[in-house]
Image (tube, rainbow, N blue to C red; front, side, top):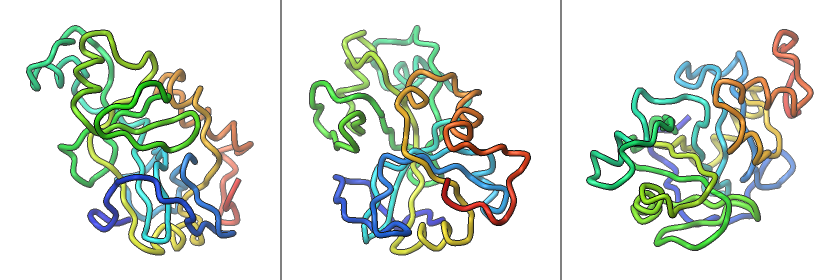
Length: 200
């Protein structure tokens, strides 16, 4: 896992997965053999994956701060919003990422898939604070990044399980239930994980 090599930007596509496919719009679930304990028990939603590397945000590690508190700190409306904000990863933890279904385009929005966009500009937070933003969204601070070939190396070592993302889990499932929900989506019993497990 890299703390700095991959910078999030527009989706470039054409990334090498195990069979040459991009894993953007996939869930990565930390396996018991992932060496980096910062990601123990985590799910990463992968936003971009190309020959240059990959980046995503963790979606089940809430911070000890609500969205309302963040909006108040930014002098925005919405201080009443008791919505969790997630620690997206160890890189640029002051930087915000909003995952949401496509609707309008904000100042800095990148398409991940036909069902998910990621926005990094203040205007989406201002709209959320005014109850004018996307109806379904997830807010994270920081991101998880991999350099060229890093994610592939970790996948080959069974550090992560992968499956195509499900927006119901991303936007509608309570964060406490997401880990088990993704494992069920994969058909994996966590109690039976062993070192032979790779891609689900």
